[in-house]
Image (cartoon, rainbow, N blue to C red; front, side, top):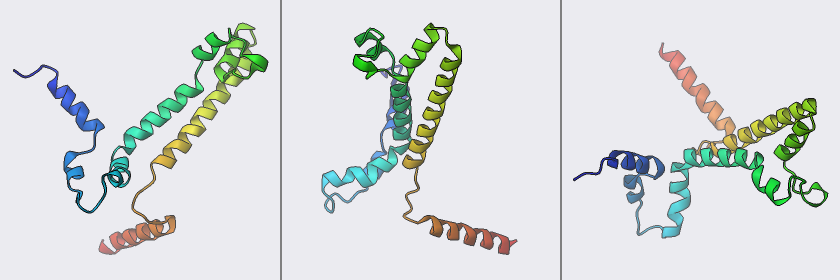
Amino acid sequence: MPVQNEPCRTSHRKILSPSYIIISAIPVHTLPPSSHISPLTIPLIRPILVYVMITSMIGGLQMFDVPQILTNGKGGPDRTSTTMIMYLNNHLFSKNYGMAGAVSVVLFLVCAVLCVIVYFSLTKEDDGLTKAQRKELKAAKKAAAKGGK
């Protein structure tokens, strides 16, 4: 008897794992097992890796509860473990809304810049071409398309 949630589990597995057909196409006798991970598996899981890296970074920048509980809201000795959210919280409770608004905008900008850096560093093209070669190839395709009209 099939389980009711079986289609959901199989589609979840298909999304999160590289295709078995692609992995089985590797000639096993030519490569050691440790070398299969880098050139094959990492490019296949890159979209998931980008998502996890960006959401983890945002979660780390918004960390509040652990340092707040461990230091009783004071940030430890000499405020060494004060996070940006703890700093924002201190300004909100002291009714300094202008500074709290400025801190929240700075936090947003820092998150945005770091997310863009992580996104573009992890989504590079894997064709082995330099930027100039890719530009020449694009111009050649454009010229061929224009000549064909």
